[in-house]
Each structure stands twice: as C-alpha cells, then as structure tokens.
Image (tube, rainbow, N blue to C red; front, side, top):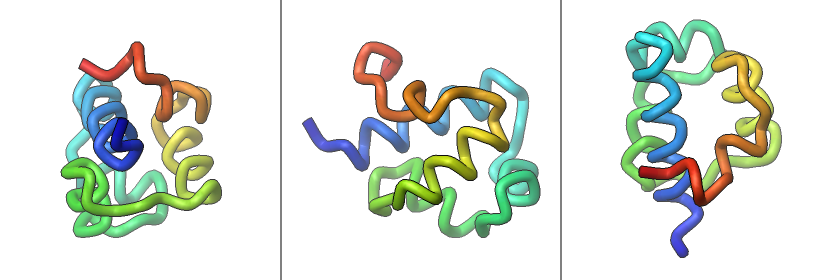
Length: 72
C-alpha cells in the first residue's frame, strides 16, 4: 500500500466533503496550494507535523488521514 497515495486521497476526499478548495485549505493549514496539490496526487511524503496541521484544518482526527478503509 502506497501511504502517500492513501493520505492524498483521504485529504482530497475530506476537503471536497467540506466544500473547500485547495486554496482555502492552504489558508487554514498554513501549507501552500502547490504542496497540497502534490500531496493529493500522492507525490508528497507528509511529516507527522503536516498530518497534524491538515487534520486540524479539516476538523478531523489525524487517524482519518491514514485510515485505509476511508480511502475510496
């Protein structure tokens, strides 16, 4: 299982569920839109701190970002 793709798919899904653009999530998380784009495509390897920042910005547990059952 490619964890980068899994995390990227979960971030993208949760972001869309909350009707957020990548730009809006970038503002909420303090990450760049370019970084989020690469992350959602599975091209970035997020750190624990990045996962925490994303989870906080999305209003979810960090576990939801790495859970394989949540990835569609």
